Length: 225
Image (cartoon, rainbow, N blue to C red; front, side):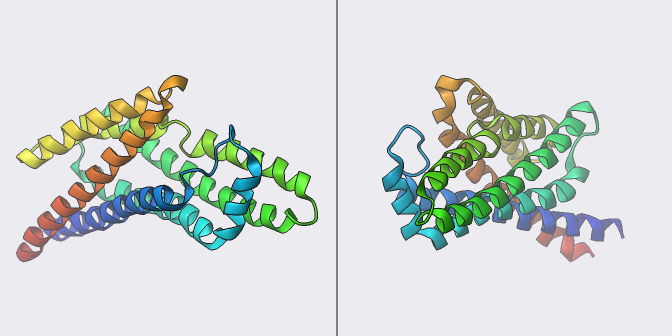
């Protein structure tokens, strides 16, 4: 029975990690290819509204994947990884921040998609209102959805300190979590927010490697069930 619970947890963590990692990959790829010039409050708004209108379906999909899909995957990851953390205050803090991060990303995704739809509806008849809402939307997305990576980085550092170390790959995962979590903490400093890209790439790699590792553990445990 205990062995069955372990292999189910490994499978849950593996699936959630891969989905989270692919969400990061999809987000980065689409951003670079289509939206690198979008969402910048310092740039002219008209070209950005045109970009939004011309790529509305892709924009909705992008927001859905990078925020909502990722948030749901993070909740599943939290449920599955809990048995593999050392018990203590740090692990408890990490779990709290993990659920908090998931909630923030899901809320951001819903806000972004609903706001985008409303702005597109208003663009022809009430352009001034649409522009005002666009600025408000971008400010909210940046504020709660990744303008800085403080919540996610606290979670990643806490996880790095709490993960049990059994194999060499465990120690590698701990070290990488601490390094990129530390980089994420620096994004709380206004002039260092650009480090968020490094945090994103590091988190993507961390999730994908964790997913591969947990799937291998799942296959080993399944043999014993």
